[in-house]
Amino acid sequence: MTLETETVHNRDCVEGMRELAEGSIDLAFADPPFNIGYDYDVYRDNREADEYLDWCDAWIAQVVRALKADGTFWLAIGDEYAAELKVAMQRAHRLVCRSWVIWYYTFGVNCKSKFTRSHAHLFQMVKDPKRFTFNADSIRVPSARQLVYADARANPKGRLPDDTWILRPQDVPDGFRPDQDTWYFSRVAGTFRERAGWHGCQMPEQLLGRIIRASSNEGETVLDPFGGSGTTLAVAKKLGRRFVGFELSPEYAANITERLASIQPGDPLNGPAEPLVSSPRTEDGRRLDEPKKVRFRRPKPRANASLPGFED
Image (cartoon, rainbow, N blue to C red; front, top):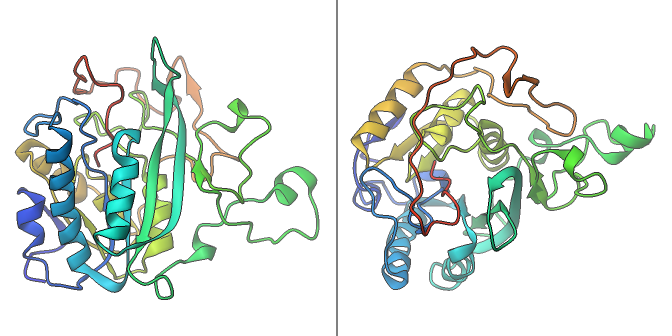
């Protein structure tokens, strides 16, 4: 690897990743623009479909080239291109899909003529289905036997999470057991303490924590081609991983650098670790331990955008 690690590089990710040594990355997480007309500061998010898919093919090819033979690639994407990109990753790039996770959240975008969208897709892809990192014990959650039945036969370590990740269990009283494929994490709303304040599409640290703990080990290298608000890199640093990222926007890259400088390995992740048993307390729409005045700038989606992308 010729590029400096433990930093974010302010440059185009396709060009930048070409300078990564082949087979040097243990885990890659990408949350690219969704091509739905979101108003980023320097990126045009309304390409023609074929142009967008060709661009995705180019950056995915560089991720795959840089990934180790036993490495893992996670892709976060919206409905519009989930099917095409899954097929492309499997057929053109020869990756194997280990899990198709649904991240469910409330506070979805209100729609007038369709059901409110409150989910995103998370694809866990590997090069070798028989040789990849999956640290099951690091991501276990309380089981129904523990939470509901107080069954002495319950595994004290809990169970593996399901693959649909949801925000508020009280909103789904009968569904989404922790052994299924629905993941439950809060979207980072404007009143949340972990909101960075300068990027409108921010993923929660606990979601990235689950992915990084499960798919990498301490000291290994995590790649994020789309730095965004810097959550992937920040969580990697907190969890003792090496990391390298790219961000096209000079402003976002500078803010990521500042965010990384403010944390240390071993720092706790922001947000509730397990929403089934804990959630942030709020008062008048804010956390009890947060100042009343919270200022942040959020890019506004264009009129034809049905959902902000979760670039991170």
